[in-house]
Length: 151
Image 1: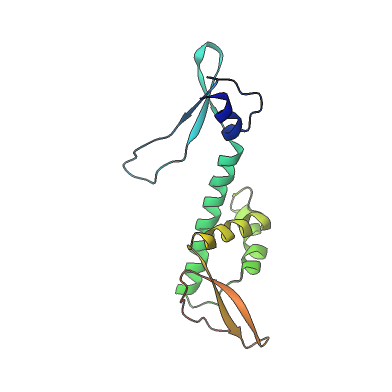
Image 2 (image 1 turned 60 degrees about the vertical axis):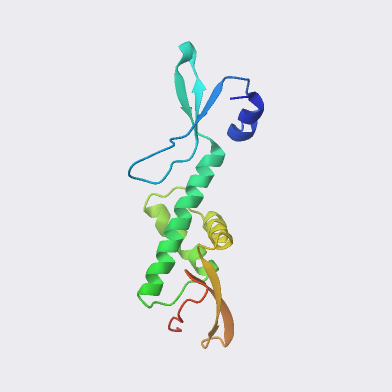
């Protein structure tokens, strides 16, 4: 891997030509494609894994998007009150951390949901809330999601 690419991809300001190797599993029979991973040449030419901070962030974002989508979908299917972006960001990170998902902070959850909205995986749907007589923006899995019970 050229030094310039290593400096950008791996965040190693002292990278030199040929020290890092970028790889990706191109085909997998039973499972989604995997993201790119990096190896570093060690003593004697041994290849050692390198954990890229940016890739760790992307993996966390992907998991948070999947968890948020599953939560919104299950609440829609069960007819429960929909969640707002603030609501999911305030409540779920603590529960997901207890389940062992490190990095599930309010900020990370809200950022992942914002990405899911940009990717049109989740949608913001405005509904009237009779409790406070205002329009409230809820999260939904479709732009024309059915109305959930108020309350």
